[in-house]
Image (tube, rainbow, N blue to C red; front, side, top):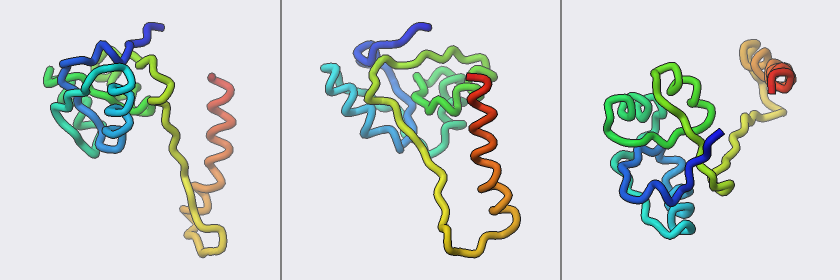
Length: 119
């Protein structure tokens, strides 16, 4: 698997999720470049569509990679470990949850156990 050095992003128009803007700026500075953000968005689907239209390079979370590949785009990971992020699902313990919410909460551990089988 090929990993793209962050330094190769110098001067390229980046399409970036607003959530990762600061993280990518810090990584670029650490690698001696200044990131050029052509567009910031709150929706990875728009970034993928704009990358497909040729407006720039979309910097998307790994969870959106399958969508990008489905759209015929090449996906390359960046080599900076500081760009690795995590997300979490949280909920209150001492609060009423609808049956749908309870079902979803009970599904989460099962889902990740299934994922481990394929990784």
